[in-house]
Image: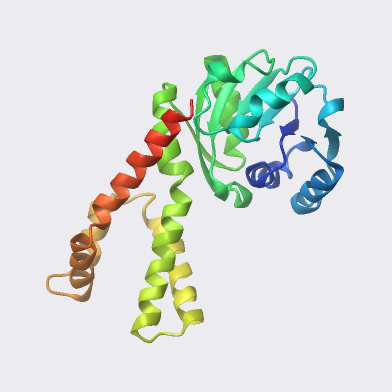
Length: 253
């Protein structure tokens, strides 16, 4: 595998992945305008080879497709040659649909926004010959898991891909609750950040049910708060979030 990665597209996810890979890979990017490409380079923070779509040649490249799903058919004619491998981070875009862009092999990847701090949870599926390479590449930006088929990847998209937004809502809501009870906003934010950092470590080795039981003593404060969460339907809301996101991912194919 080449140590150069070519990004097709220059949006938020492309930037996040590029920031994660920049220490170990040379970065190239293909985009619509000099302004957008210069902004990409400045945000990633390293020197980047920049190419506009009319001049793009992906022959032999290790390419990561990071455009909007509805833009694939539009940009495909501009991409000359055939990539060595095309990795796609497009939600709900099937391996078959990706063949609009020429490549020897195809892999779908679903990282999340934590790629920019090297803590993404990335799901992968595609040409089995690339399993080891794909896991190695995306492990640079966090953890990577190879799944059995595209159905599983759509579910993973709904969980790990969209998950940061769900957790952000929970984090914000907990802070709002503390402020409502009388805590200063800055202190609430600091406590929330410490909470999530510690929880992130604990959940690596302890089952959620056991972690919950370890915190919730009989008749205590946690039990009171936990009861309120169950009464408010938080469990069902989280399950429905995954279901609706999964349905959306399937519908985008």
